[in-house]
Length: 270
Image 1 (spheres, rainbow, N blue to C red):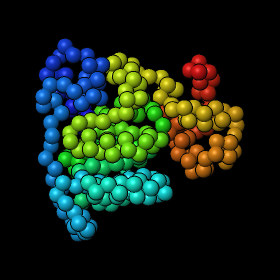
Image 2: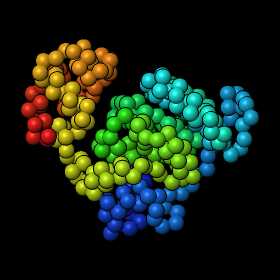
Image 3: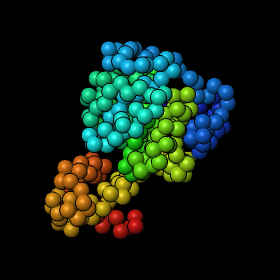
């Protein structure tokens, strides 16, 4: 995996450096010359990419978000920038991998919920089929462990969906130039995870739950149905099901009854 190779290559070059130092260098794009080498892009023009007035210095993008309306907004915003070329859009991992393999974009922008499915297999497959393509993650909420694992899987950029849209422009340009990009407010939680590597690998399952997942677990323990949880949290029933699936996976349980048994541990984490 590209992310693991990055960590191992830096550790072997200077064994005395701590994980915290490595994290800081990754986050700032700093370090010795050549630490984050530029890679030549193997962009393959297709019939779709040849349409319009494409210029050689444009950054080709492939977009993926499991919410079609958000995907439309993302495309509309990015097409206003002359330096970007949108090659295609996808709403699921399978379509994303198919398009990426065929179009070989400079950058893939994908939402976290799609990227993390099946233990981040989408990212791993992207690394294999598109080794010169860089990846930026968009997410609704900060989960330090997800952030850490996505970096291990080769992600070069990470941005909250609530961020200023202009930050996305900065992220794209930075990642395309070979420099990793992360908003300043995400640096502390990432460093806190990486500086104690063993802690990140040995977290109690309840500690891996995001704030929203904990909230839903509490309501499950109170006996609320998916529909009742959706109404109370102003979510769709399908979204609640997605969150519950994540909760079950993280806790290693098979049903609501088993998950509810973990609810009392949430009080200790509050």
